[in-house]
Length: 263
Image (cartoon, rainbow, N blue to C red; front, side, top):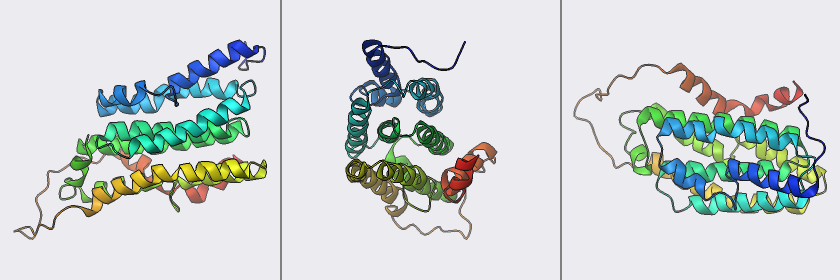
């Protein structure tokens, strides 16, 4: 056999593309994603948001040369818009991560026809950042925004890390999440799609708003409380090496981006 799909007509290609996009949870085929993610546990949500997307994304990249360019751009823009708009009013962390996933996949879909390899690189960084967020939330057993905002006295380092991961998901420099947005924007400009690049950056301001709002709630809304003792009592937690490693990767891969792309 072979790993390529080279002989599909227009109708089967369109049907296959829409089926894959529904599996990935891309807008406007996304309605199942937030509700399903909200109804499952955080570890299961991690699997649904990362591992379960690897196979359909691989198939989408393999068939990228057959997919209509206008379809990918239209659905990509809708996904970025829905991902930002849908997350603004949410207080449930799993729904926020669902809309975050929709927005990130929208960026990948926009660049899919222009540079499939860049789509793959973006997807790998998405897996790292999303895994870091879910593992951190699992460690503090947080399912609502309020749960994170009250976890500061118990796990200040992890709470700070969650705030930084949120900023990385928002795509702010010098964190890892800035790399895919920078590379996608540069590639679109190189392909003379400057208007498209400006449009997706403008739409992504919606997502940036709710990421910053969430980061603010996480770290800056805890009322002052002076402990009666010199040492604040905390329940000892065993060191979780995989979580620590993936958290570091979710934050500091930006300087290594050029080296990774050359591999």
